[in-house]
Image (cartoon, rainbow, N blue to C red):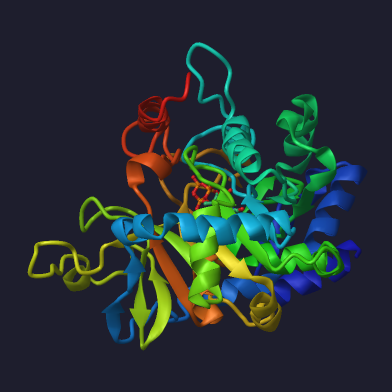
Length: 406
Ligand code: UTP
């Protein structure tokens, strides 16, 4: 694409500010910017002010297997889960394409050192958790790691430098998700540098379509992989390919399973698994009407009490039927570094949007979902912030409580 073509394209979308500094650039930078412009997906901007806010249908609480119920049949479920792992029907998918802006590190979140007296990265801690399952099942499984252009090289190198944390490198597969432009609140795409469009990962909702685009559809088929266990990089107590969870989900006949924890308060910032118009749905905390968030049963428990912890098991055959369906685009309000009046600014306060599709919206498309309650102090230690709630500090405390040496 040359300058004239780029200008014409940008005029069409009212985005000519992207060429404001073009004349100051050297030849290489000019080429780079034009190349970025050519690849831009302008369609995400249509979501701004489109009045497509989440409209909530008729809600009812989700049925869940409670911790007590799960305990009663633990052995039975575990046997089914171990059998599925042993026969190669299960693989894990680590969602590690996020930027971890709240944590404030420019490196992949999984590289963050959660150790105190020794080095222990989040990746290593999660791989240690996986090793426990492998030891129990007597078999390992494939792990797909989703990254983005922004952190792919760092992530792959870190695994390599650490000898894949003792795991079989042939069973770890890295693939990339897509990026989307960021914009100001009034829909102007930001420049990150004078010669570079500001792009950010397009959310974790595209994890399966990106896996297929990366060419792994045949791989899943040829290897007989029927179930994918999706998990977030930022929960250091994450139990991955937990045989009990796998067994319970397979036995239920549902197309997916979701680990849930009891919310600590109506205000806790977790998505809530419930039913909307009869279908399993996760309502994000900022979209949940207060009257439902605060509703209590006769025994005082929150009616909508099950918060999701981003650990799902999805049936591959159902994913193949639904993954091309359009997911809603969520506007994440964020502080975005950008060029303003010729200078780079790194604002503390939110100044615009990132455009994301979310894995939570896939649960609804799956049609049926088994909610499996787990004990939060044993399985939920998210590292979202530097300090305070869901932080490095709180995660370290929970790791210690679970006997992990730091
Ligand atoms: P979060 O929603 O916490 O986002 O991701 P984040 O990008 O890690 O952190 P902030 O909001 O910028 O501070 C939940 C999980 O989804 C993954 C993350 O890596 C994390 O495991 N994720 C998020 C992706 O894989 N891709 C994305 O585009 C966004």
